[in-house]
Image 1 (spheres, rainbow over the protein chains, first blue to last red):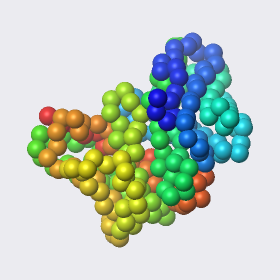
Image 2: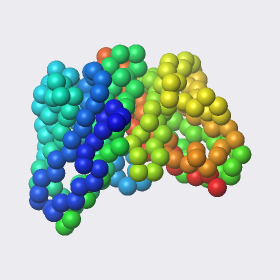
Image 3: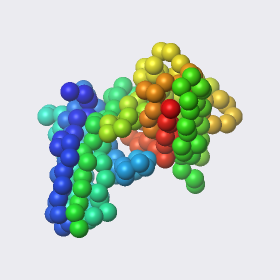
Image 4: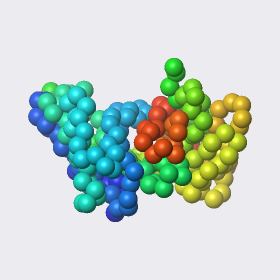
Length: 113
Length: 116
């Protein structure tokens, strides 16, 4: 599988429920970032977690990072219909040469009102 | 402070024509990245440029694709003799100090290229 692989590929929940998306990667990283993309639109940066951090919060978002397992999770609490979008994790190259991001295939989240 | 600008937002080209995609980074950013997104897939890195320099083009197809970031003006991604498989969304991102490793990349709205 490729670097930054998300699962599940698709997730459908009811408004008010929590949504958890997972991301696995293969190589060492400097940081891991989560992005959101509405259908046919650009990417919106949600949160960046550094390799020496284990958990980070931003509003209804909670991100964890386990470097020993090379995995991260994004939790959206009390979901809303407006959270419907695709969510991507992205890891950097880890070599400080340019920090190009490697994206996973994304999790398509649908929140039903 | 305007965000990353890309134009055009939508571009239709016939097979064999050339496509030019433009990206203006955020003010104060001198590092630009281009990514391609095929339908229902994640973004794939293509090229990383600084002003007047290509730093990493490991994700660029060897033929027909080129990129530049001149001293003045936007970064240009150029696709010559387009084929149907080039149809995708092309995103540009900019960042202030990539070498510090902890800076997010700011993405533009993308250019959706359709080759007919």
